[in-house]
Image 1 (tube, rainbow, N blue to C red):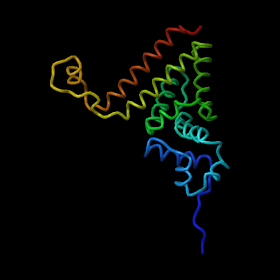
Image 2: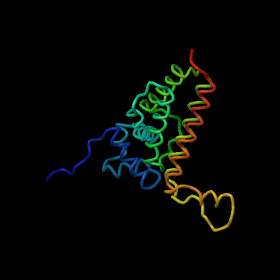
Image 3: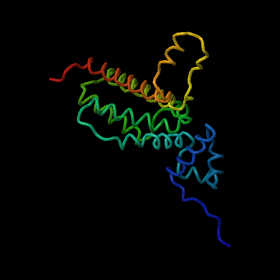
Image 4: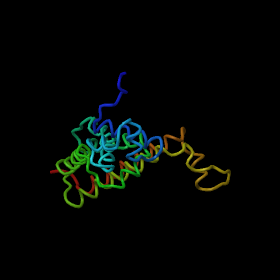
Length: 204
């Protein structure tokens, strides 16, 4: 009798299966993941160092679009492309965001992408030290919030017929309503880039 099929485990396969559980349930446990893959928990631990390591594997999957972002000679355009790729990667899996922000970033591929951004801001924009760290934090916060906003209902606020500043704004907003998130992200991103450009001033 043929033996039942078992997946050939790898870190990437484990992370991908865990991400499927998170997309479906908003969470995962290691026993649930082992059951989904049809293996024992001990088999998983031959490839990963516990649940936190699996979470970092998920992070690596979500930040993959950053590596594919087109390079740009201008630092401002490079930041736009980095931030947009970041938002899009996380927006595809919004349920994973609370889990990912709950632990220190340790995935090597993700750290490499943050370092790429840091190098752009240091080498091309002239930022350093705390100014550089704050700039990265601003962009990180924007991208995570924008990714969550893309998962929000199309109608975020109820237009209840009352004549208020909010209902007037809703009535005057362009359609489709979903585009509100994109417009907000792009405007906030330009505000951050503009602030950084004013901070560093023209390059000599």
